[in-house]
Image 1 (cartoon, rainbow, N blue to C red):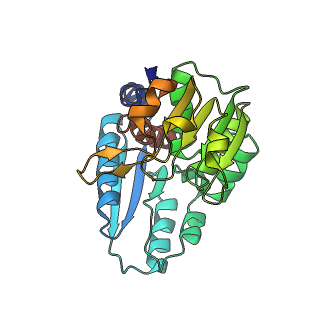
Image 2: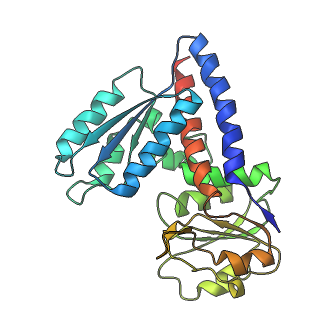
Length: 280
């Protein structure tokens, strides 16, 4: 069993991205990322602080637009338009979830697709589905980079993606399809989850339910990627996989924390620098 170390790989990627940033600087371009943070959700604030720190390390200029929970949808849209029109900002990131009175779809659709470093705009979603170059959501992109780093080729593998969200599950499915895998996707209405995961060479899970994937649900030698993040009663971070019992059966597995999480932020930086190169 080999652990897929996302922390080490993300640190390596950040060093490479700093070099790319420095090269862009010599050409008069400083990659810029604008973050919109609405409300005072503790998890969102923590994520944004982590992203801000990572931006500094990679030579990316970042600015955070903090807004109260009561902010109107129109004000958020005005801010997005202002960022879209700012030639010094290459990426726009709206930290989700948004308050209930805000239409998340309208907010995402307002972002310039060329600055959509989260890869959520329908324009980029469509290009991903068609197998064309696009901005890809950071978490599934991070999974693909992690697999590639460890020379795991999805081509010909039977893959099972557990979770069908627009942010993780659906783009993960499309990336795997584009890479030549046979993909099974499961969700809350799947009748017999075990029947799907048990036959998969590659299991990727991201639903936010502790111990959802147990040892009897994976076959010997399976590759298991755990995207889930849950906090135990003791305050410990764990994934969706019963790591202690599942890991001995695996050929490869990601830990939580230290697996996919760090890769997500690294891919956000990579997407931002990719957007900045459009200015050349």
